[in-house]
Length: 193
Image (cartoon, rainbow, N blue to C red; front, side, top):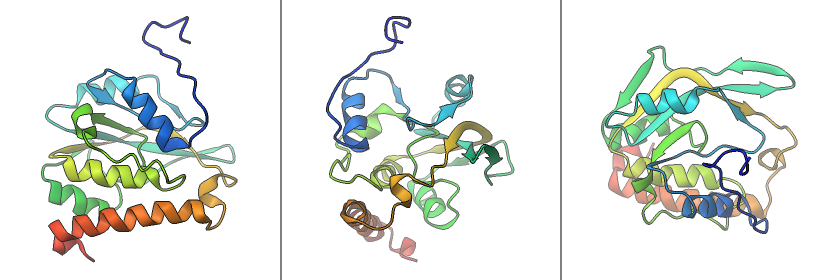
């Protein structure tokens, strides 16, 4: 793809887990917005265009997604409105911790580059690193826009690491989550439920 498209850059590195790969990718990027995707997932052909066109003042734009499992494609529950806007950090975090439509996955999101300043990429975690990065990004965001249209295709893998049972790999992710959750509850005590 690098030979075919001038905007594609290939980076070769040893496997250090998903968080390290994201960090290396981020450090080698130069766009105003960042988007991540899992290697086994795919996106609609107009995803980037549709998300970028509705950015406005939003720090993060999320889209709904399809879950692909055993050859079946299922639209996931989401907001009934075409667009939903959250305009305060408190509202964003409240939505994340209570409704869960704003999820902890890094995929299906267009994220303003400046939110990554001083971000802990949680490189020691092999699982759960995405939710812990998103907690930090949500806490920095002033506005999030959610699109009800599914633009991302998430491939559910029953054999994947997140379904492999609890191991030390999971412990690091849980330790990060507890750390970031405590910091958020200290700032927003009403979110302690």
